[in-house]
Length: 179
Image (cartoon, rainbow, N blue to C red):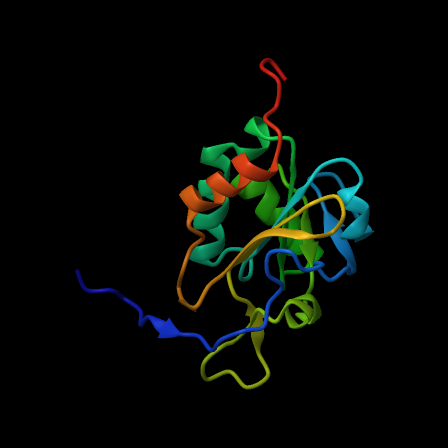
């Protein structure tokens, strides 16, 4: 099968790993109704959080990642919250949420500073000064400790969803039936 794009190996990163503290940040968090500045730590009050980092809204990896998460219904199965993070603006997030039927709130980080904090920056080939987060997922518990981390080491790459589900089963409580 011939691909319409090249697979690009990405450099190694020093991203947060299991047992480390996830860096805190505050960014606009967009829902289908509104957006406001919210800190990562404030989302960790009750349940673990799956932080899903992805390229800009509308790019095929973003669509694929969110479709897969929707189809697997992790939030309906486990006691956890899910939030996304990309360089897209709150306006773009609002459209993406509406068009894709995304139930999760999305952090807006046009400056890509959070990706820099997490060391998951993907400098786009041939575009000086243009970067986005590489695909990554971090399962963060209520103590802000990373329980699972996966970061793309090539472009494009997608989270290993079965491995992610194993991590959720290990670190998150199942939702009671009928909830």
